[in-house]
Amino acid sequence: MILTPFGLAPGARADGDDYFMSLNGELRETELTFFGAVRDADRKFLMGATVHVDILFKMESGPRHLGYDSRTNELGRYRTNNLGRTIVGMGFDIDPEAVTLTVVKEGYHLVRQEYRSKRNEKRLIEVNFFMAKD
Image (cartoon, rainbow, N blue to C red; front, side):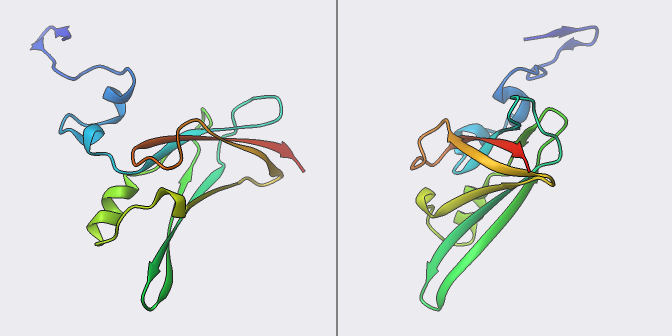
């Protein structure tokens, strides 16, 4: 708990997931959220890279795709919305194996993609990208 001149400020911390998540329990309810960083060959963070998430749904009428783009900030970090909540809200089951992540940045190409979390889990999944200049 943090003391301020005006009394107690519950939840007013800026460390870890408490900073990124609201106090309404979103962290515990997270179904499928991706986060990570994009770096160059010198391990410097790349600002302005676009991380694209493509989710394939198998439907009776044929395959359908849900796409989501997230851009890296000045620290080279990205984070998607809770895509699992959207998927469940649309009436579909979550299949983490049906998710493909790609990254694009002008003048760079992908060298390596690193999953720091298990791919088949429904939760916060860390995926980092390493790029090299063209």
